[in-house]
Length: 156
Image (cartoon, rainbow, N blue to C red; front, side, top):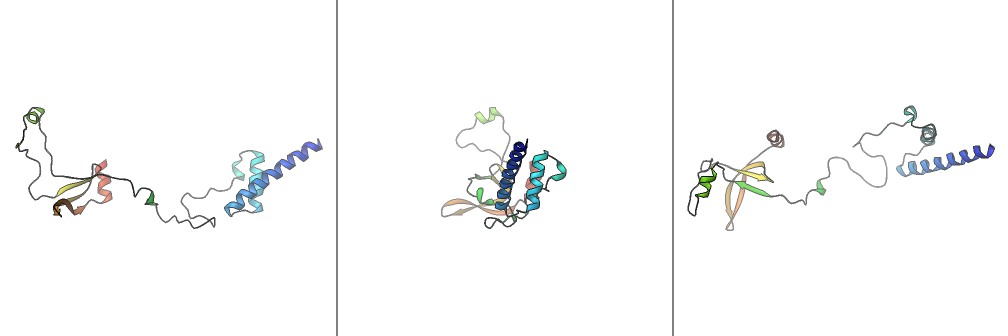
């Protein structure tokens, strides 16, 4: 029976050493923390001996290098390509009339001449603008950018 007590004791010590190494890596190692984790592990999952969880997104404690959590890191998405298009106008037409169109046909759109055009990114309205010509190519001069809150309202 004494051998069994020594075996449990050796296992507990090995477990305590593992926890100590893990806590030491995080910079929070303390004997009280190690004892609390060891006690929680040997008794099962008792909620009274658990340490409080850190707030997600809180500033990190001293660790391995500088980490800033001031805002979202947008570097991950900056190289994703998107399609920008400009919509001159739209209209509804029946298939019968569509099939009758040929070269030189005129289709009346729902916009007035000189009215700002819609600027779309991947089909979502983000701004209004006007057509400009730069180096013999068409371009867009933005006249009104839609605020993020207005864009969210239009999604609903």
